[in-house]
Length: 86
Image (cartoon, rainbow, N blue to C red; front, top):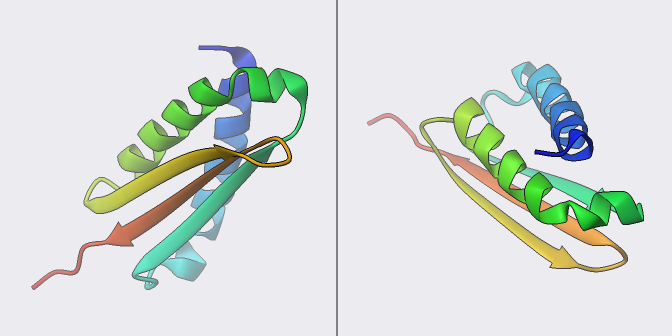
């Protein structure tokens, strides 16, 4: 795993964790990363898979969908749907 990928995902997860208390009741959360630096774009697939893995670990009981596409760099979007208790 490249250091660039790990640092980008670590920074994103830190922001997500810091904001979690404010959004704990939200049934759906959306996140995005935009990679514009050529070095970031080069490891975009690593960032995608690491981000997906970390989100699934942070939200173990949620449905996590991550997508990536090229657009003015490389964009990674994620949607987390929390499962409601019956």
